[in-house]
Length: 219
Image (tube, rainbow, N blue to C red; front, side, top):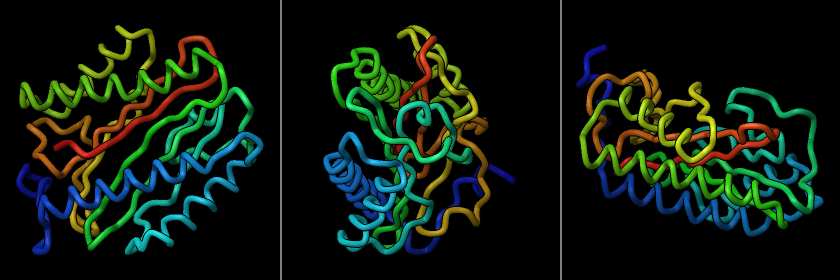
């Protein structure tokens, strides 16, 4: 598929609508995070996420609500959780939402630590730090998606974490983006256009069994 086709959009597409979808998805992430408490099961958190999105008036979910606790923060989107873990008093979790608002796809994710575990707090912060550095590199250099993820791996290592190189970002658009079959951002050999690509960063602690996730629209 040529570059133009990989960055194709529908007739209803607008950057303003993509920004709105992004903003609404972040509001949802924060609302869900504020409602999650130690003692809750992963399944309960996911059900809560769906309920809050419905209350917010979403069009639909375009990918399943994904909330991971503890060791499950190391798992990729397609991997099943290990049972139905309970969030501990000193623990870590992430939220990953893919939601359609006004016909456009929002996709946002972030990690949160509860309690006093310093490593978990630092890990949650580091995922966003690496994301911010990589997004800034995209804005400053206009480099390819491939180069972006090479830079992401280097920045994660510089901060003392391991990047999950199997998580490479993807397209979004007016719904449904899947018809364009554009592949992963990390395999895209040209400059990613603004408002069309989700940069995903998933890192792991070098010795302990947890990680962190952060994703947002490149704009």
